[in-house]
Length: 156
Image (cartoon, rainbow, N blue to C red; front, side):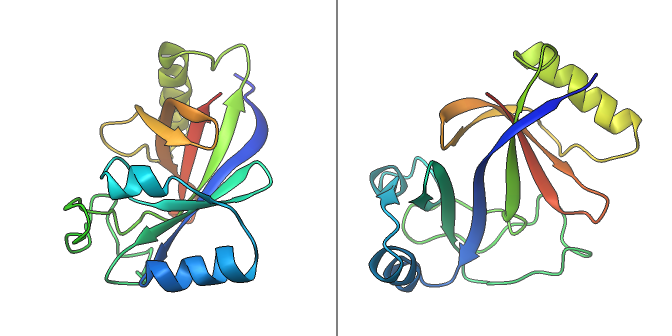
């Protein structure tokens, strides 16, 4: 299988003060705010700012940093007081949009994930699932690169 990585969807970063982050990215740099209503409704664990067609997800957490060599994929931060959800500490990731003849459905994404596991790389538990991104809600899965960094593969 030869996947065709076609674009960047979004980057997600943890922030300890959402208002300060929005003052920097929106007020200072002029990036438009997206998803504030969905965040306040508890639908997503972030407020996004847009850079061109790509999003930067600002994920509020109490702990700003982790050691990627010791953090488990399912480690959780303290409960977020705004909507009660628990945010994965390993929430920082790069999301790659994937399109090829072999990755345009859930079953075909499953095949790609099996190939990634066969090559010796980790696919996180309970993947794939549907997630929101810059282009809406699509099938996606978190995998780990050789350094243990989270990479989200999103069908588009």
